[in-house]
Amino acid sequence: MTEAIGRGVRWFSVSIACALLTACASSGTVVLLPENDGRATAVTVRQGDKEVVLDQPYAAAKATALGPRSYSSSAREVDAQFGAALAAQPSRASSFTLYFVEGKDEFTEESKKVVDQILSEIARRPVPDVLVVGHTDAVGNDQYNDALGQQRAETVRAALMRLGIPSTDIHAISRGKRAPAVPTADGVAEPRNRRVEIVVR
Image 1 (spheres, rainbow, N blue to C red):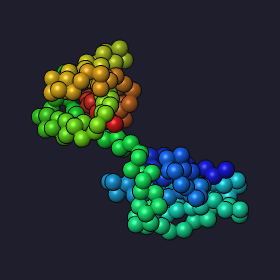
Image 2: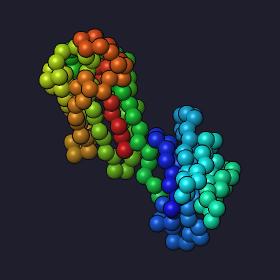
Image 3: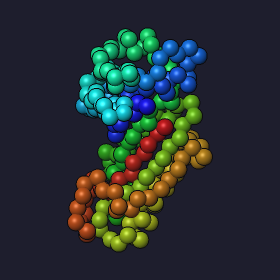
């Protein structure tokens, strides 16, 4: 059995692709695909007690009788071999962050400019699913911040609905102060934590 492990990493396994293709001659191949934002990533491919690390774009590993064998692939080779399977995969999620005025569910001026980008991303997806997650800073108790985070998430959800996004496509939840972008001591006002994250799938 070949196992590929990588957190937040874009990689492609031919064994998964075989389920999508009518003619697939091989299985047990993993290719590390480049990230859209240029981040350096890596994936560890394990077969039995042997493993190889892929840490360059288009680095690949194939299962063999002696364990995983690594080799270099290319964008052209990946497209030629796996283009149909990659095209059949759902579009990758896109994330946006909106920031709020302290203690309120009111957008900052900069965040108002991001709304058009969110609408464009939703419009380009045939069946969009939008998750809206409200966050707060560490001022106030958990109950207060849970409610404020939900209020902020609902504000964004309502704004998207007014702009024509169906309510059934938008889900709003709160994390309160439990998932800060910038860790702080309790009671600290941190503008970067007063936010709503929007994930469009």
